[in-house]
Length: 420
Image 1 (cartoon, helix red, strand yellow):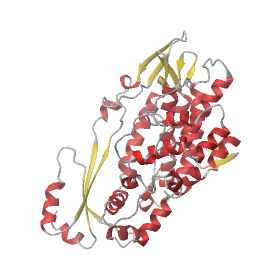
Image 2 (spheres, helix red, strand yellow; image 1 turned 180 degrees about the vertical axis):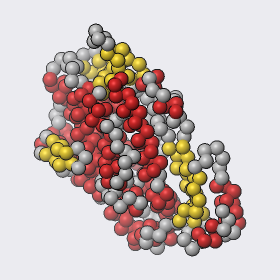
Image 3 (cartoon, helix red, strand yellow; image 1 turned 60 degrees about the horizontal axis):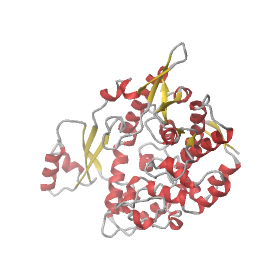
Image 4 (cartoon, one colour; image 1 turned 90 degrees about the vertical axis):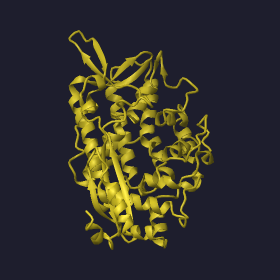
């Protein structure tokens, strides 16, 4: 099957992959917008997670082919099996995403209620869309299709590339003495993954901005692997190092200029206040059989029928208006103004959007698998170094960028402006 995509052109799918895409769990992603409320700021941003996931699958296959084109696999079956599992992991990495935005995770049940058999230890926290993804991939009607269409792999192997914490119980990712799971996981999720390569290009295209334009073709062509003990890790040829810098900076600017747009932020904040309201009766079910029916349209329909004032603001497209925006990184200038407005009986919504270039760098609390830079001399000898040792971009942009905003109702905006 061939799909025409505005970002990547032709995307080829096997009949087995088509069977997965036709499943209701994946079709549900047609009704989950990639950028939630961002379309109220950028009207073209109506694309969905269905298209994004297909793009991620396509790029995962291309990345695998570039990285391992010269790797001495023991058999073509091993290569084909590993290539297939990374394509499926990229395809299904968002299959459990909630309606509209990450804000809907406010009404997800505890993880224990979802009954995720792939977890050895059940976390005592509210579920996230990643938990639903693991459940759908490993224990649903979609799991049955995966087993039927791909008999040489198990759904748990796909989940292990999506969630790095799921323990291994077999040698599926071993090829000889070398462990492939770290590399394949990094293709799906890392500082240089196909998820970001797709959504940056796709979001930029549909928003009509230039911030997310990066030379993904050059990045893909220069991806390679590095042997790190008994495992393989993602690596990049030195000649594409500046493109990697541009990739990180482009994503950083997309957050500051698009994803953190003041109008998108206030809609998310209002939705959060509605979902936390005592009279809100919208919740996401623990059963994935029911969850498959919950998408953006279901939540929008619910909101349109609610009498809650926060819900009505969303339904009527009349959110609070921004009163002040601060980009000061050293002092908090908003707290005093909020106290003054509160004393005047003016209700406020405060929002703080934080952007950081990288979670990979200096993340000692949750260390990541390293990414390497590869140099090849004239004698074809490969020398590798960790990427953070070979670029200054992490240090130059190490500071977290914060945007503080205060919003007030339309009715009180003029009165509130007098206290600026």
